[in-house]
Image (tube, rainbow, N blue to C red):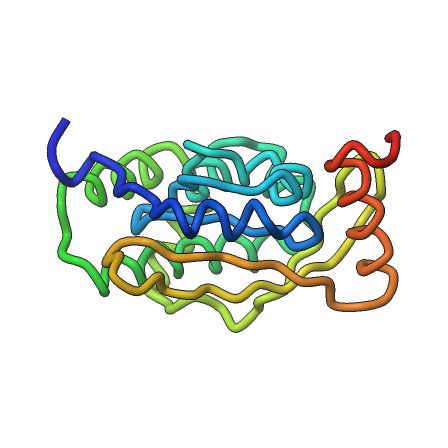
Length: 180
């Protein structure tokens, strides 16, 4: 394993911080868009928000991710744009080349979005459909973690009352305070 492939360690205080947010979905990702640590609510929102899952591979290689979303082109452009933005902020290395090469070879949706050479779309809100609470629309913020060159904290919030109620219900279920 080269130094580019070793995930950076998420600082203990950041892990503790996101775990202390039982009602706020949050996770930390690296420069390759791999989730390094996620809280229970983030994992309940999406199976993609699990430790070790690469968001780009999950989006483009798991057929249900794009197929189940009402705006698959927006998702494709957004994820490819985030990967491109991360590549522009960091030096190209074997890790980036492997991910991009694999996705270009295995996903026409990725190849098309990557070829457009766009920055991430302006959309910051996406609809999720956890089975136990139904659809909810969440917007996110990405925050660079000081002192951690490669790490980004991603925090989600509901965009409307329906989504706020669905997320609150999901938080109760994820914490074990309510049954599904």
